[in-house]
Length: 322
Image (cartoon, rainbow, N blue to C red):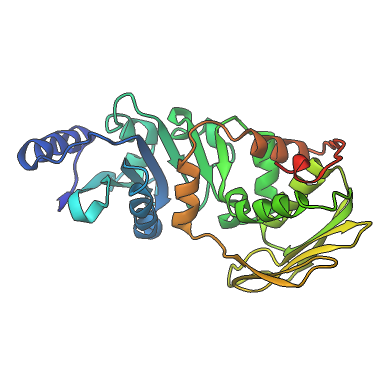
């Protein structure tokens, strides 16, 4: 069911939600969080689709706040839309389209619609604030999700994120590395337990995940990591490969086709492994599984993108990677 509320107020939207609940039995029981999505008009439907899919694992109230990027005082208004039932997956979806000056106070637009006593997660699918925790929506959120790959300058955004990092910040560029980090940790947890002497990470020049994986390897293994840049990735396939140099022979993971990689290890047959690039839905589902701060991400981004160098001693395989 979809209900449109043109030229409305937050008070009227809230009353309409109560009325829907009373008339149709649609309740917010079992909702575990409020997901606030801040985007522009073009990004509304894609964000809702990903959030609806993620809500099947994490039932939530979804509030989409979209701005027309205009500061005009003449056409200031708020249009709202409420989606429940089959149109909202396992969630309630409230879409707020703010025009002109009506978008000047985002926090006041969403505060009256938050689920009581439930965590708030903020997500910026496209352009994100320079310091998410200091933004109007970020201030009320316990978790703040950005996507460096969607920014105009991904590397510069990581540097800004490092400078203004607050526990609870996370980024899809890091989330997309989960399968790679698991594979590398599993490989180094097998004999021989030779020390890693150096590493190479290969990937597109515009991929922030390449920067983050290199930073993670450097911090956890205490080695120099070389970056091999390939042309910008228009298809968004992400990382191309990783090489770990050891005395007993090099270990390589090379992804030459979307979703499929080749694992090359000394004295072992070459194997094909699955390494798909996570979808928007997959990244959101993973980030919503934990509402506590990701301390490892915080360490990697602050230590590596603020000019600091940390080289811990690593003596045995995956103990340095986990």
